Length: 79
Image (cartoon, rainbow, N blue to C red; front, side):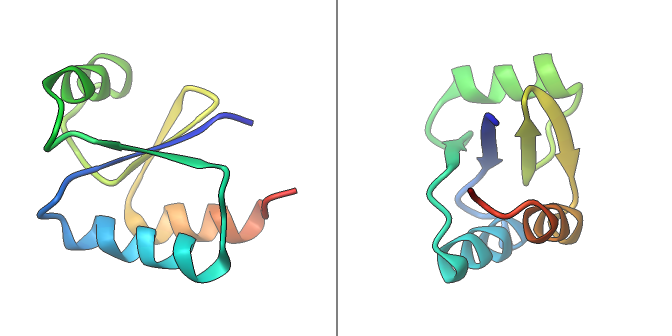
């Protein structure tokens, strides 16, 4: 499963998701920071349809809202 988490430096909701990932020790989530790359920001809008973070792409399908992302990660633990 391909997991890409789009975040920004100033987003508290992004920090919430990243903190959860760190706490459970997941290593299968790739971070993409839109604060550091215009290309990443463009990809977020092109694929997801809007400039909103955090956004977890699950095999290319976007999921928004930090609590929804955390719940999905809990329901789908790393193998």
